[in-house]
Length: 252
Length: 306
Image: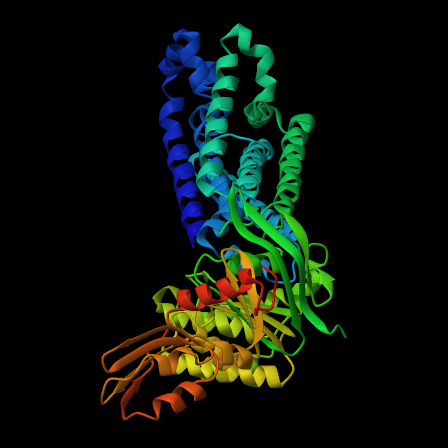
């Protein structure tokens, strides 16, 4: 039910953005404006500020730099925190764990459910953009589009797994959401500011957003290493969740 | 097959600086209906959640169906039915959807039996759980504990929220299931209920087991309050020496006292005078516990060394 609303919302957003593109592409003054903007403005519009009017630049700036990852992270963090800590807060975990299932399996199956729903949402994102591009004559490679959508959903899964791990450790959903969200905001700023603040540059690799955006998947396709870093850390956090959850008392 | 259903040795759980339960030595035989009696906050739920491996002991050990609760939880839970004390269900499912989901996690249940249970408890499984009253939610909780015909049922305050008629239906269900071979471990803060349902009773107070006894013995030893109204004033001396009589007060034509054991001697002593009325006000649970507590710490009576 709630997934259906997410899918409708994301599809509508994509179609709206793509429909708006022809207007932008016919306004070269925008490119000029962006070229003259100060560095710190560019940092917050995304690395693609200079070619804002190209299809990839437009989608990067309007969607993939901030909007899409934000939506995916909200989706996954809410599911990841609900999986263990949410049920624990509602009190249904006692009933669930009275079944002959080991705790680690409960965590892994819930993580798998979160991954499957995120992948579906990623597929919605890709199809809506592909359909919109075809309808409004936006020239963008479908393979690169898929690379960007996949990177975005992996970034979401990383933060979802982080929320799952925090919930498995503390049993408190509020804490899991709060800490995961704060970490997402902090690492987003770390990555985007590192583009302009020279001192931050060496630290940008600590941000999950670096592995999502730095290789420009929308323009250059999937970067194997960056993709692997996101995937492996999401899996590691999931395994950690199972380990942490096995060891502690279930809250009343 | 193991003869012992539940065995704990020195089972202890501290929460931070609070004590949950301390040095609990429990032994529940197979086939019996064991009542776990205590006031709220005494440690009943803590003990039950330790048996389910939902929480882990600070020290000590618990064995369920002959297996270590910490190590072989999955095997134990296969053969176990559990009703949580603070029952929470998935509110957006119907009763039937919830039971099918839970049965699925166990590899299925006999659906004819589920319908039979639901019918006996007059429980409508087609309604969304969020629309149900507390008592009706509790019935679904009871059905899910019974539905896979477990060997051992651990139930935390099972009659919570049930109306008196349903409570009696539940007592009958427990009796019948027990006669078919199942073992029950049932917590309660209601002595009359435990007396009706159980073979043996363990009494827990402030985290410690203060007594374990047969229900019959408990009834014999149970504390009663008695008030006898006479037609004319009576001499207190005639009653003071009767065994089991405590807190004796004779005011004018009324005698009040507490009594343990048989009422026979007291009634016979009273019968020598003209008796207008005999009243036995119900004794509060806390008083019964105080009574046991005194006995337990005094070293006499009681089953466990507290």
